[in-house]
Length: 97
Image (cartoon, rainbow, N blue to C red; front, side, top):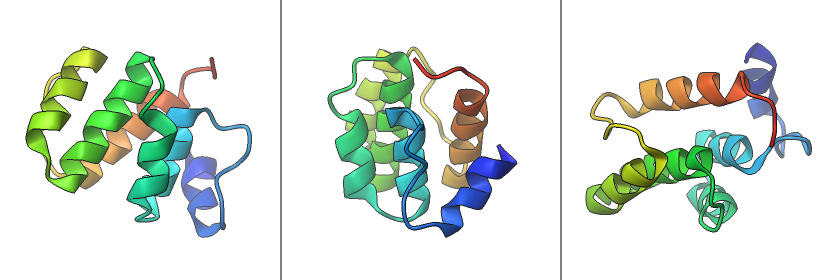
């Protein structure tokens, strides 16, 4: 996780990141469109979770709720930064698909 966070000083995510983690990387850089593009057509629960987070960042809570359901996750209500950390920590601990 520390390596992932340290990579945020770079110009692009590591090429070996899966789409959900790469999307979180772009989201942390404030590049919503790049992040959204990576997960919008992914059919995995992890991508749906990141997709939900992105719509929450955008302020589209109805759309976010849909994606939380697709991810089988409860709708987040806490700080966005805490959610980003939780998603990143969870996904970083999983092997790439």
